[in-house]
Structure formats: structure tokens, C-alpha cells
Image 1: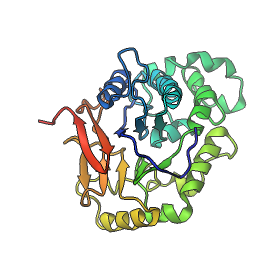
Image 2 (image 1 turned 45 degrees about the horizontal axis):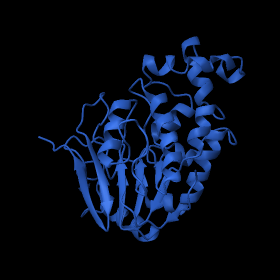
Image 3 (image 1 turned 180 degrees about the vertical axis):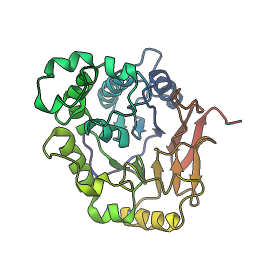
Image 4 (image 1 turned 90 degrees about the vertical axis):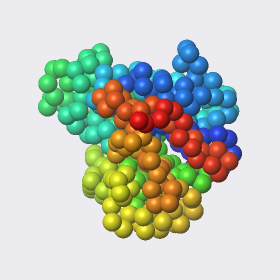
Length: 285
């Protein structure tokens, strides 16, 4: 479900970082947030949850994660809350047919989609890959699920994105970025525009996630926040070995803590409520 570029929010908000194919870690994060009950149903009432992308790759449970988040999004809306799932670089990679980080289970869980293997664009994939390709290539059923998501989302005084928003992204147009990623996933355009394929695109940028941030990153961040009229940015993508961290005077919060078993990071989520930001979850030794 698409949301307006800027959405006022007064409810408690929790952000969850990269989960990379680990359904158990996803459940743990959602329960830390207070969003779900023990049977994986929405229990958060009017709260808002944002997952900042990279549900795919590095683990076998991707299909379960995508399906669970879609169900919870519907349940949250019915309860007066919201669950927003963003697209990260691994989502766009899979839609582009880049399966280099897919696990064996990540192929077999989509094998039923191989019935569409007579599509000409699937011929370049091996038999074991074709079910996944049929599901994720532009216009496929799972690509269409991801086309409903945002790449950059502004809620209240916070902008959420997988990698980061730079001044050139604002000039290009936040709504344009969201629209073009969705068009690519639906198959309305043949590929992502070159601007969005770069390693400094909003899905790939690491300047704010580096520790310390890249030279000049804080000044560029301040420019972006001013132009978007928000107070802070929340990003995933770059694993924070010390748990959730902030930088640039708490103007950026980095929430990819390596939740998935592939990384073995701490169980942490970020809460934003009534202008205050705090880390919820296990401390890092």
C-alpha cells in the first residue's frame, strides 16, 4: 500500500532493520516491538512499524517473511495501525535476476513457480533457479508484492530508507524514485534507471552507515533533512557490530544490527515516540 510522501504520525513507531531470510529473527524483532502476539497476529493496535528493507537473501525463510509481513500489514491497517515494508538493495537485485546471495532453500521454496518456465526471459536461468526467477523477475507475483512498497518513506519527523538519502536524490525527486522502482518491479520499464543502479543510490548508499560516517556525510545529511523538513534519518544496510548506533548528533540512526543468523547480531529495534528515540532489546557486550 502506497502512502503519501509525508505522513503525520502521533503513535508509537518502531523501526526494524535487515532480516535477510531469517523468519525466527523477524518474529523476535516484531515481538520486541510489541507488534505481534505468539501466533504471529498483529497485536500492536495503532502503533506503526517500519521494516527498512533486505528481507531477501542469505537465509532460507524469505518467502515466509514476505508473506508474514504482507498479512501483518493488512491486520495492522484493520486495527488502525500500520506496517510499512521498504525495498532494499537485495529486493531490487532479485527483481533484476541477481541471485548471487540466494541460499539453496531460497531456490527450493519458490520451485512451484517453475510452471512459468517457458517465459523467454527465464531461459538464462538454470532449472533450479527458474522458480525463483518466475516469482521475482519484473511482473512476477513476488515482484508485484514489492512494487507496492516504498523505497523512501517519511513518517512524522523521520525519513526511512534502506541505504540513505543524499542531496542528489532529493533533487532527482523522492516521489520519482519510489515511482520508478515500482515501475521496474511491475515490468512497466525494462530496467531501473541508471541513476538508481549506482552504488550511491538510496538502496546502496553507505556514507551514513560507516563508522565514523564518510567525510562530509554529516553536512550532506543536514542538507537533506532540511530540504525534506524532517528531524532525523533511519537507515539499514550497513551492519553495526555494536548494535544500533547514531551519528551526526543523533541525526541519523543505523539499525542494521545483523539480526539474521547469517550475522548473529543482537536482537534490537528502534523506538520513536513523542520526540524521543531509544533502543529496545538486548544490550551488546
